[in-house]
Image (tube, rainbow, N blue to C red; front, side, top):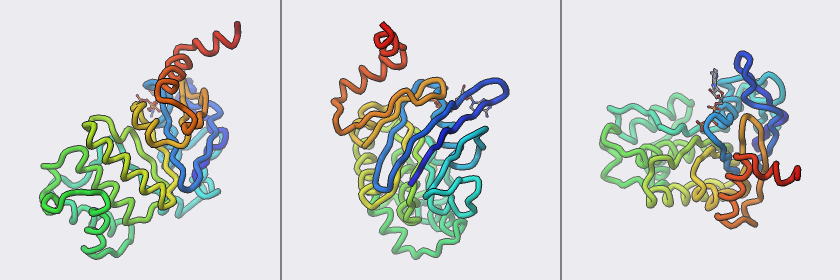
Amino acid sequence: MLEAIQLSKSFADKQVITDLSFKVEQGEIMCLLGANGAGKSTTLNIFLNFLQPDSGQARIDGVDVQQSANGKDKLVYLPEQVNLYQEFNAIDNLKYLASLSGLSVSEAQINAALDETGLEQNARKQSLKNYSKGMRQKVGIAFAIMRQAKVLLLDEPTSGLDPSATLEFIRIVERLAKKGAAILMVTHDFYCAHTLADKIGIMDKGKLLTLLDNNKLPLSSLETTYHELISGKAAMREAS
Ligand SMILES: Nc1ncnc2c1ncn2[C@@H]1O[C@H](COP(=O)(O)OP(=O)(O)OP(=O)(O)O)[C@@H](O)[C@H]1O
C-alpha cells in the first residue's frame, strides 16, 4: 500500500507540494492529473526517496520510505522514457537489471514476463536501439512482473504512444493491478486515466484539489471538472 500523509515540499522559497494526502491500496490504480508544474513528478520522487519532504511522510506498506531500507524492493518505477542499455537486447537488459536487484532469473522466466507484456518474440534478441517507446516500456513492465512489484510508479507512460499501444499498455497495467499491485500513475491523458483508474486526483500548484471516484464518472465530466478546477471556475461558483 502507498500512502502520502500531509506531504509538503519546497525548493528555495517556492512551495511545490502542500499538505498532500492520499492512499492507494493493493490492487488499486490511482491516476494523478494536473497542469505542468503542479508537483506530480515531485510527488513520485518523494516516494522514490530521491527527494525528501519538508514535512509529512510517504509510506509504502505503512513504513516511511526514508526509514525503510528495503522499501524500494517492493517498488518499480517506470519513467516517461525507459532508459535501458541501448546496445543490449531485451533479454540481456532484463538479466542485468535482475542481477542488480539480486534476483536470480532464468531465461524462461524472463520470456514468461515478456510474454505477459506481448513483446514480440523476434524483437527480444534485437538491441534496444531499434525499439519504439512502446517496446521499451514493455521491457520496463516485464521487470516489474519479474520483481513481482507490490507498488508501481508510472510517470506519463502513454505520452507519445499511438492509440493501439496505449490500449495495450492499459491492459497490461490492469492485469498488474488484478494481481494485487498498488499503482500510482502520473498522466496528462484523460482517456487513459478514465479507462484505468479507480480514483483520480487532480493537482494544481502543489495541492490536491479533488480526489474523484472514477467508477461513477463519465469521461466528459472528468474533462469538465479538470478544466473548471484548474481555471478556478469551480471555486468561484462555490464562493458565489
Ligand atoms: N530540483 C528542483 N529544484 C527546483 N525546483 C524544482 C525542482 N524540481 C521541480 N521543481 C519545481 O517544482 C515544481 C513542480 O515540478 P514537477 O516536475 O513536480 O511538476 P509536474 O506536475 O510533474 O509537471 P509536468 O506535468 O510538467 O511534468 C515546478 O515549478 C518545478 O519547476
